[in-house]
Image 1: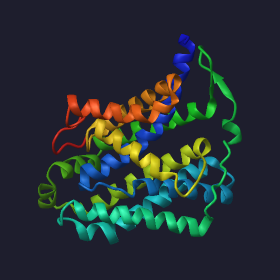
Image 2 (image 1 turned 90 degrees about the vertical axis):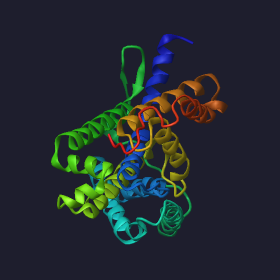
Image 3 (image 1 turned 90 degrees about the horizontal axis):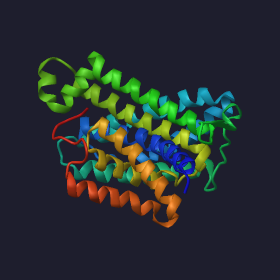
Image 4 (image 1 turned 45 degrees about the vertical axis):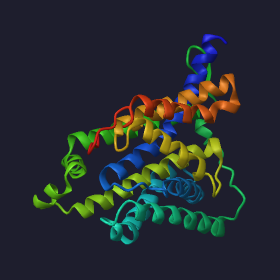
Length: 291
């Protein structure tokens, strides 16, 4: 194996990891703020890809689809939180788990009814086709774009949480929601916005993954498992952990597939097991922490 091949495979892992980062950050936001393990997260990922297909057909613009799909699915996420998840707060973690697990099946069946059981091809946008030179080899332009979008989104989210009043409320609400209520903040509206934001990030990940993985009603199932692994490795509720662990899992899986493709998926679980042995709370996990 040459150094150039190793570096190209590492960049391939970063592209895969970028999808996982967006998924895991959305999941960590919801868990860190609402303490809800969202088993419908993969379904929101899938709906985001289909929403992108519809938006692309209507506008003939991939950029417009990138904007429209997360907004539409984010609104759906807020509706789900307001009508289905909110009544279960305070009843124990089992209730939202069962609810979101069942909701994911409902969403998959609805998509099958609307779009059929066959997958929908999703071509790479024309302006993102081709490859670019990285100095040590050529890499698909679309994957470079994907990594760039991930960097921009994560950076914007970090600035929002660390430099704005809304971010201050979110972090305070994750640590002690009762104090936030006493200060006069409607914490329920914040929860609804956070659930919508998490769903929107999952939708963005689904749309960005569509040119590489295709668009099917079942596409959210495997990525949900991967996102949970990333969330556990990074630390439940840690946004920094989700970002680092997402890239780490992507690179580990990519490099493993270079040597033995059959063990690529297994390497992800091996990394999770090793992390839990060394740090049971994950790489950056801390009790009552969102950051």
